[in-house]
Length: 341
Image (cartoon, rainbow, N blue to C red; front, side):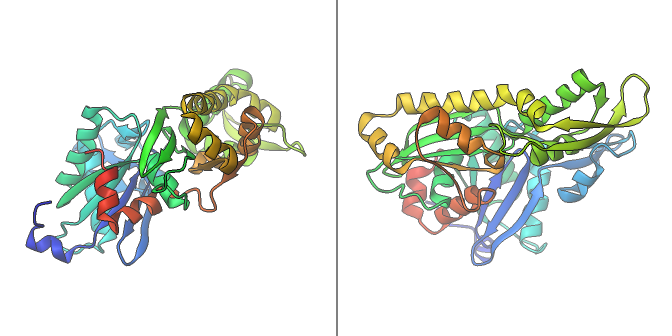
């Protein structure tokens, strides 16, 4: 490894979970210092950034025509290079309390099946955001590390990380992914399915934030013990006025069925592709689920029913990836083995 620039020695190393929905940053010696939506509000007329992160999310769906709330990361990968660079730069400066001459060493988690072009975009964005070094690691591997699985041992561990844009599945042994797959169906696809369902069945137009609230409130992957319902507010597409519709958990479960089936089928495929010796380990240990999508009601029950294996949800599913990435900062030998640069 090359010597770090002198001014980078005064910057704390960063672990970044650059997610479709949220970006989390861990600073060495301080812990998680930033957890903000991956959104940038930009002025369409002059290109100036109006807000980043939480402030930009508040603008989503409520801004005048000349202000656009943009998500520069789509399906787990960078779709807008320049905006991602500016967003990352803002977050890095915020994490360092806006100190000047910040040139941190950065480890970023990325989806398992990221293409060389997408990989280069992530690396370049961090470099242009003034990182002195950039290392990329697979999300599923660091998620397993973050939940405490013994990934360095010659034993099989299986983790399913369901984020906003991608679901990353991996079977890990000896610090590497024996099998890994990333499917671009996760939390955001579920939100989109709810939006389309409300439009098609109830003639009600709702926004992304409302769809997310419905998903978290009454969304499920397997029948609930006690049925629940929820009042959903939006705009009536026929009359053009505000309207409220009461929806049941069963109909939301039905509209999420395709997304859930895609995730479950990807898990089943991973189990079929796993070497027999490691399959025995997974049979004993089970599957660990992490990421915000794992909190969908009864998703663990659905996976358990479909696979016949023990399934558990991480204690801190929303921070597993960034905490695993942070552990890479303290173990250069492990980082060197896990890096996919």
